[in-house]
Image 1 (tube, rainbow, N blue to C red):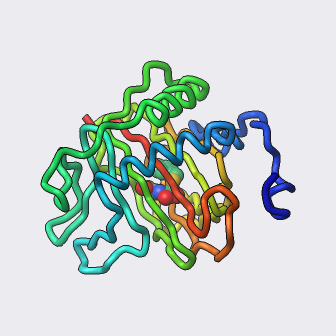
Image 2 (cartoon, rainbow, N blue to C red):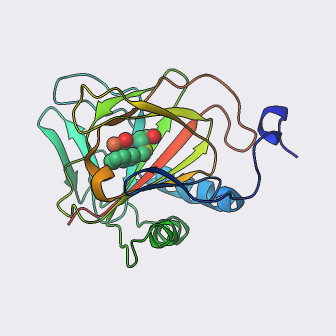
Length: 217
Ligand code: MD3
Ligand code: FE
């Protein structure tokens, strides 16, 4: 059905695994819905193209990004912020597709956060070599709400550190269909993604997508 490499991975979702206090990994939770999730991502990308944002420090990010939902994460010379419109098109971000929003609500509920209603959804696309350096996500005003992340396509090494940048990060593999809910004390840890190894995923191609759902306001 799929390529040799990926036949070795479980097709059915496994047990939830605790990664840290408040953080739960749901292996392959989204794998059965991957085709619908990828189609939804493509509708967003068609309306709000992926782009390489510039950091306030003047570096162009290696990860290509877009957003859907009421608010979108943007970075430029003025800083990081959530904005209701896409600076590229001047239009509101595309509506968050139901299949994406419902997946995030389901995963949050299973992790012990019922009633999750994300108002921002950031779509990251990694090409081989793309990475994300250690950072904290702290531009969201609602610190009680978790961040939910969905990984699709090529696997990545996720770096999960501590409360300071100096804490040596643990490494986790995030694969196609994996969903992680980061809440409680895990919400503000430093984290990042190691440079993506090249490869080919039978459903997604030569990229990794990561979709994060956030409750900003
Ligand atoms: C842990 N994205 O978009 S997703 C990001 O794979 C981001 O693209 C990574 O970090 C990616 O900000 C990691 C998992 C993730 C997202 C947010 C977190 C883990 C987190 C916030 C707090 C703690
Ligand atoms: Fe992050």
